[in-house]
Image (cartoon, rainbow, N blue to C red; front, side):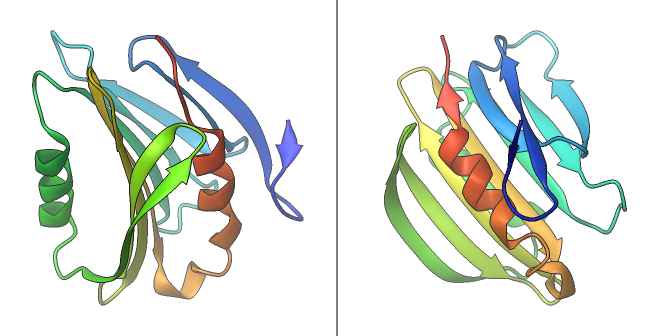
Length: 149
């Protein structure tokens, strides 16, 4: 366990089916959902106070979806999202597309990775008034993300 800030301890989560490992806020509730008959699915973490914040990791096999399709689906879910930053970044897990944006009520930050076999999308949404409260979470989480095979 490590501390990301004054009050957030993290733990390591490893998932052989989704082929990834990531640190997450230890006290947050985890929900794992697999797509029946595939090795695709997602992990969701929410803070104890249930304030509309969601940390989500989606892992999908490339034979079922391409990275562009994965991102397009996300934009459909986040209606009204206005992108303020879109850039390519180098992280320990490899090159990723980093996107930051806002809708009327929420702040959004995501990273999209892909390799030969899988596409990964990791994002954090918070209510705008809670953006500063969770500002260090995505930074910590994304630098610990690893693909495992």
